[in-house]
Length: 269
Image (cartoon, rainbow, N blue to C red; front, top):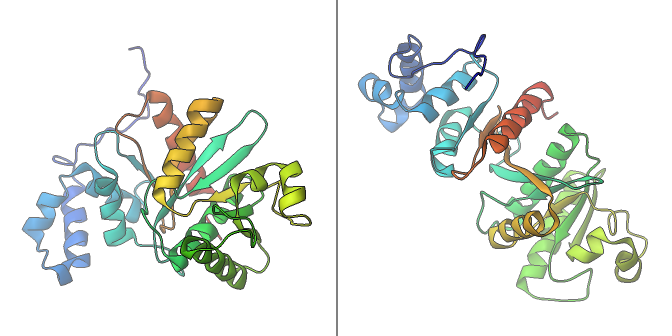
């Protein structure tokens, strides 16, 4: 198609000279799970495992997968041997929502179906760090169907507790919750629902209480407003590994590659 592939190194895991060394390393890392060298050689024929080992050993700076694999297939190798960063217990994700006048960060819209209080706090902290990586000042809204003390219930209480955890771990971070989406994003509504808040009406990072809410909200905003949704951007791993939808377009792939390159160059502190 007239594409210049000069400087592009195409690697076939099945025939690559790297496979033997990767298999030896994988067998070493997974020996406690009963993985021997023959099994490791077989596993390293898989593109996701091979690519993730390239990242782990510094052969490449990041990996993008998922156009032909499930999210689980993309993430599993990273969980096995790249592992999460210190102080982070779960891998989560955000979408960068490119609006005409700003960039918003939505998490978690792709990975964790029903996060508990501690996981929700982890997602919020990781999402704030991702926002900084991409030049967005984090003002974190912990979303709920209630704003402040206007409502009650188990789901509201979980968001309130998660917000308290975030404040305890990052007292410097602007965070508010529970808060409804309208109060988080609209200054006039914020003035009546939560006056004086440093987040209400000007939130940049939106943490959804569960995957149902997050996934449907990002798609609703994308389809209804024309916003460009870049992601999911995985966060919490020691090194950049990112997932694509199996329905992704060429533009989606290019955007995710660019995001991965930025993650590699601007590591989370």
